[in-house]
Image 1: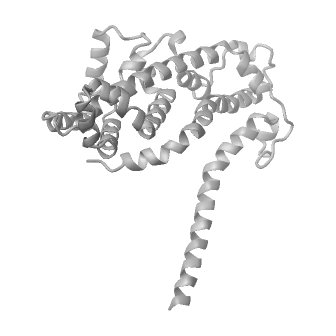
Image 2: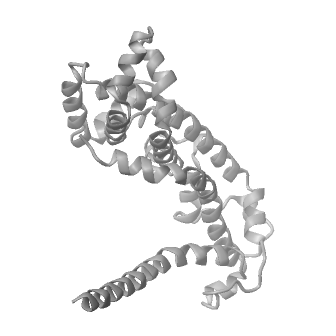
Image 3: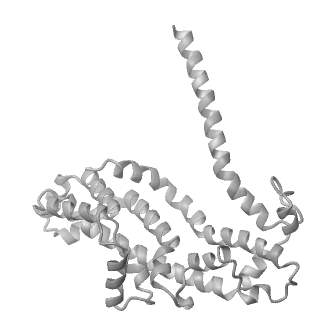
Length: 294
């Protein structure tokens, strides 16, 4: 019986390793292909000769991306939207999650019901657009920050984390020492909430970095375009800026355009890929604790 169980375990481990390896390859290979395609000869990429290693290495696509002004305008705008928006998200989420985590907040259950209703039902796109217009936020950079200022799902995660990790006895001890709710939040709750803050930072930051629909709806001026809207113009509408193609012959424009597209995908994803390893150590702990919703 014991030997049979050991054999079954070995078979299970083998199937698990093979399945996970295949899944890993399916996820990683497209990213790897974009990296090698962005530095390979465009003709080799278009003829299918590039699939494992780069061929005819050149950085023409990256050179043209660096020289393009619109890309940097998109980068600047996205960084502003991401930094300001994420900071606002974290402040509002904590300010809402903290009282909801307290049992002595009698209106907490009614506030939660209200939040859950907004999570599943909303007025629709046209009423939302009309409100934004009445607030004079069309073609204003604040619209990129205020429209998604708070996420109910993240509030629930933060509330659950605070309930699970900030004991009542700690608050009672602080009250005896003359601590108010505001001081307790700033001096005790926030320093003890690094895992969930890291998770919220990553959730909100990536959402702002990839924000596309809000800009598409409410931003028409190119100087306010976030990076994702600039990418859409180049990748989907196939409209390169004149400065990117001014010295390229008509015959080579398609090949250079492909290099630029691959390079832009890498350039736009790079900040998130760089930041993630620094938050990863908090990520698993924060997600697992926050995933138990109450």
